[in-house]
Image (cartoon, rainbow, N blue to C red; front, side, top):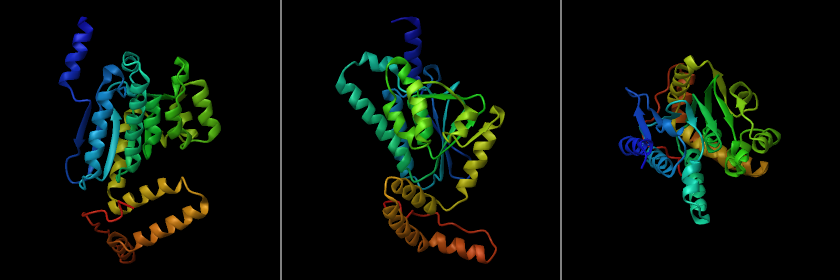
Amino acid sequence: MSNTESRNKAYADASPYVLRANNDGADGITTLRLNRPDELNALSEGMLASLQAELDDIATDRTVRVVVLEGAGRAFCAGHNLKEMRTNYSLAYQKKLFATCSQMMQSVLRLPQPVIAKVGGLATAAGCQLVATCDLAIAADTVRLATSGINVGLFCSTPGVAVGRSVARKHAMDLLLTGDFLEAPRAAEIGLINQVVPKGLLDETVSELAAKLARKSAHALALGKQAFYRQLEMGISDAYAFTGKEMARNMMDRDAAEGIDAFIEKRNPEWDQGSRDGDDG
C-alpha cells in the first residue's frame, strides 16, 4: 500500500463520513456535512450508508425542524465514487449501488422536515442530483454544477430524474446530453437552485432561510411537503382532489386553528411541539 493510500485509509477510519451538528438553542436546525473533502464528498458506499442513517434518524426526531445539507472543502458533492465503481465491476454491484443511492434521494423527499442544500462548491453528476432533490438550494456565486457523466461515457440517467423534475425539459436535456458545466447564476435562471449569493454571505443567507422555516408550523410543513411531491405525479383532477382533502385535514389541525386565531388576534402563534399528525398521509 502506498503512502497516499495509507494516509487516505487512516483518514477514512478516523473521520465520520457525515458530520451532524445541531444548532445551539431551541431553533431546531440540524446541519449534515458530507465529510470527505479529499474525495470531493463522493457518494461512496460508506457515504451513502452514513447519509441514509442520518436521514432515517432525523425523520423521527421531532426536535429537528429544518435540515441544512452541505459539503466540506471545495466541493458540495462530486457524484459517485468512480474508482469504487470500477473496482467492483459487476452488474449486480452496480444495480445495488444505484438502488441504494435512489433510496437515499427519495428519503430526502420523504423527510418531514424541509431540506436546504447549502452549495459552497462543485456539484456534479449525482451531486447535482442531490442539489436538485433538496427542497431548496442556495449556492455561492463561485459554484459550478453539471450532470457530467456523459463525458466519461456514462449517461446521468438517475440524476436526470431529479434534474428533470426541477427544470424544463430542454434545459435538463442540455445538461444531460452535453455534460457542460453551469455557472451558479445560470443554474438559478433555469430553476436548478433558488438563489445565488457571494461566497462570503452563504452562511448568513442559509442561516436566515433555515431560521425562517424553523419558525413555521412543523406539522404544516411536513404535511405540505409530502402532499406537494405526491401531487406532482398525478393528473390535475386527481391532484386537486388529493390536495383538497389534505388542506381540509390540515385545517382541522391544532396548529392551523392556533395560527388563524393568532392572525385574527394580531399576536405570534404558539405552534404545537408534539407529533405531526399528518406525517403518514
